[in-house]
Length: 198
Ligand SMILES: Nc1nc2c(c(=O)[nH]1)N[C@H]1C(S)=C(S)[C@@H](COP(=O)(O)O)O[C@H]1N2
Ligand SMILES: [Mo]
Image 1 (cartoon, helix red, strand yellow):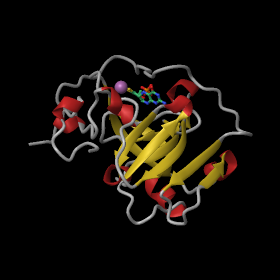
Image 2: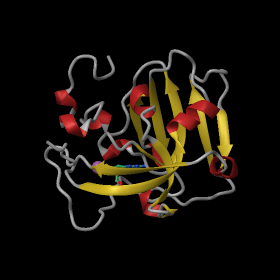
Image 3: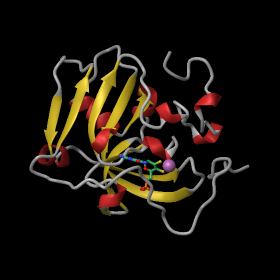
C-alpha cells in the first residue's frame, strides 16, 4: 500500500493561507543580523550580516506544510541554508539537545536537536524559486516540514542552543512540545512524560 501523504485530520484548502500572530516586520538589510548564541562550542556567539548569511552554501527541499488548524499546503519548494550547514559554521557545545528559534517581536519555537538536524530542516530565503514574500517570512524563515507549521518560524533572527528544553510561544500556550502531525501531537495535554520540559 502506498503511504498516505496527508497526516490525519488535515485537508488541502483552496489557495495558500497566510497565518501569523502580530505584524509583518520590515526588513532592513543594513542592520539585520542573524545570531547564533547560547551553548555554542566556542562559548562565543556567532553573528551573520545579511551579506554573510546570503553567502552560505545553499540547498533546496520540496516538502508539504501542515498547520495545526488543519490545512496542509502540498509540494512547496524551499531554497536556503540547511540547519546542518548552520551547525557546521556555528557549532553547538556537546551537551546541546534542544534549540530555540527566535523571530522578530519575541515569537519563538523550540525544537529537539534531532528535529533541527533532520535533513529537510532549512532556513529558507526562497519559496518556489522566488524570494519569500514579506508576509511569509522574508528574508529568512525556518522550515521544519515534518512538524506542525507553528514550528516553521517566520522572520528568524536568532538560534539559541539550549542545554535544557524550554517552551516557545505556542508551546507555552497549550500546544504540543514536539508537534508531530503524523501522531496528531496538537495540544500539550497529549504530551507523554519526557516529551516536554520538566
Ligand atoms: N514569526 C512567526 N512565525 C510563524 C508564526 C507567527 O505567528 N510568527 N505562525 C506560525 C504558524 S501557526 C503557521 S501555520 C505558519 C504559517 O505560514 P504561512 O503564513 O507561510 O502559511 O507560520 C508559522 N510561523
Ligand atoms: Mo499554524
